[in-house]
Image 1 (cartoon, rainbow, N blue to C red):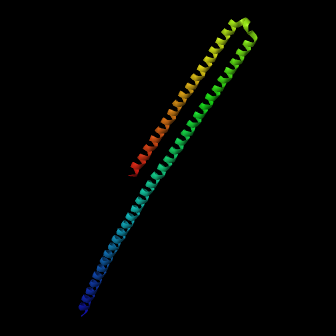
Image 2 (cartoon, rainbow, N blue to C red; image 1 turned 180 degrees about the vertical axis):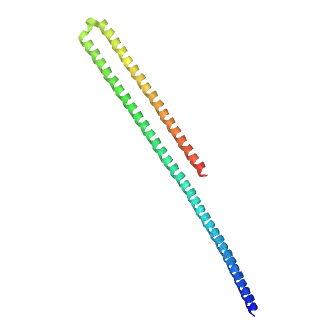
Image 3 (cartoon, rainbow, N blue to C red; image 1 turned 135 degrees about the vertical axis):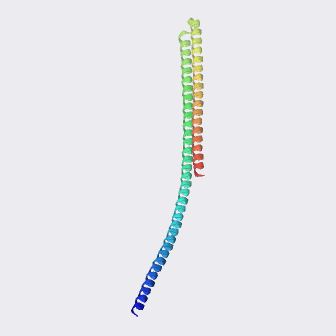
Length: 190
């Protein structure tokens, strides 16, 4: 009877150990499944975050390109307008110089005429030959002044055209550079 009780006790203990082992096994399996689900959820969450971050970066890059393009266009428009204004001012300055030179020529011609009248009044007949010579000199001087003024006006015009061409070429080069920058930004965005 006593050995029967010991056998039963051993059987109960064995069953208890088996039960504990199975319980630990089941707990370990459940824990592993829970960890797997947690990792899958975390991976999905990290994937969504990465996707959202990527979308944000793409949108930000596109926005930055658009902002830089608009800024480049605004700067180019300003530079072109400044170049046009500068050219117009130079043209007006050249016109003023031409007018001033024309007025100087007119004053010189009036002075020449005054001298001619003065010579005629003071010399008259006794120095007709001298008067003729002086008139010819005055005429030659006047002709020389006119030719000098015309040459200076032509030089101003040519210099103005050269400066205008240089400003235009600079504007064209800067516009081309801005276009290349905009194209580069566009390629970067794509």
